[in-house]
Each structure stands twice: as C-alpha cells, then as structure tokens.
Length: 129
Image (tube, one colour):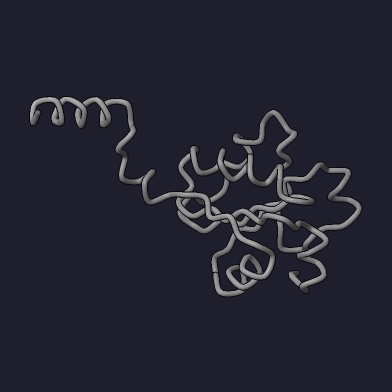
C-alpha cells in the first residue's frame, strides 16, 4: 500500500497537482461589501475592469485598469501586472470577472479577488475611486 501511495504522490507532482504555489493561490470570491473593504485595506491593490471598452467609456473607476476579457490578448495584457501584488477583478455583474479571475490565478497571480453579484455600478455607488 505504501508503494501505491508513493507512486500516486510522484504522479501528482509530475502533473502539477501538488504544486505548493498553486495551492496557496486561490481565487477569493467576495460580495460587494467584502470586496470594497479588502480594496481599502490593501495598499498595493491592482483593480482590473474586465468589461468591454464600450462599457468602460460609459463609466469607470479611476484607479482601475481596463483589460477586457473579450480581448483575445487578455492574458498577454494581464501579464504586464505584478503577479505578487493583490489583483481585484470586476465586470458588470460577476460572470466575466469570475472567468478572468480563474485565468489570472492559473497564470500565476498569487492573490486574486473576484467581485460577485455586483460590478462597476456597485463599486461606484460605494465610492470606490
């Protein structure tokens, strides 16, 4: 039995299933109040808006950076960010930001926070600048 466990362990390491850096890097999905509180408490926060450029022109958070999930070069643009600093991701409602957050986490970002159930309008109403 011990031999089987050892083989399973080697297999999991070989396929990256037991990668410590990935285990410590998970997307944290938060509601609006938690997301806003965490941004305010995080001095090096990188706020990412993953809506379309058209949505961005209709209203934006000044401290955010637009990296549209609809852009085929999303990951290329996101790779210009610091993977060691916290990244806060939002869209209009939460669907696109969830997808983008998972992609960022898989690309090696250490701390990824996803806003769920709210988006730009909620952040603006809470006074996030």
